[in-house]
Length: 171
Image (cartoon, rainbow, N blue to C red; front, side, top):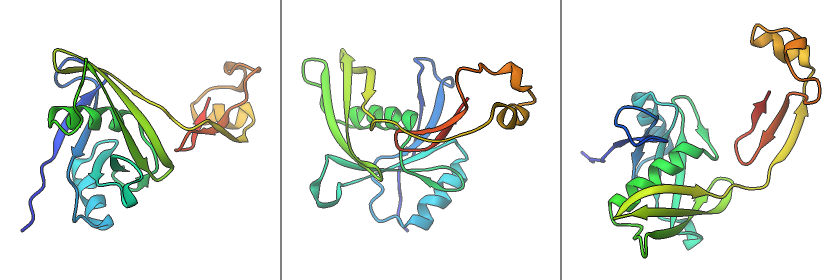
């Protein structure tokens, strides 16, 4: 039976059991898509991150992110959580309190910068792709989903799908 280590990391906090949780498998080699999906469903967090060697050595690592129901191409807090794990495991060294690596995602290769103090990560900065702007929606159409009226939304800004890798409706 194969064994994998799963680490749960709380991003955006310095306090245990607070912040935004993410399960991280820092060495997911050998897992199939179906197995990763099953693990993410079992973890039942907003995302679970899986780390692989980069295909054709395009980057330092290949990251894949799964929600309990599907794979997504890019995710913020799982990137931050995974960077923490990679530093803690010594796979991304901090030199002069700084580190950097390139991550290969389903949306391409992007850099991640790490700032630390006394060997501990204090900041993770992930660069994302330039945004693309998709469909805009009528205020009334979107407001109703939130139990609001169209007048509750700022008329200067139409609700619109925006993506830097994972499309989201911005309201």
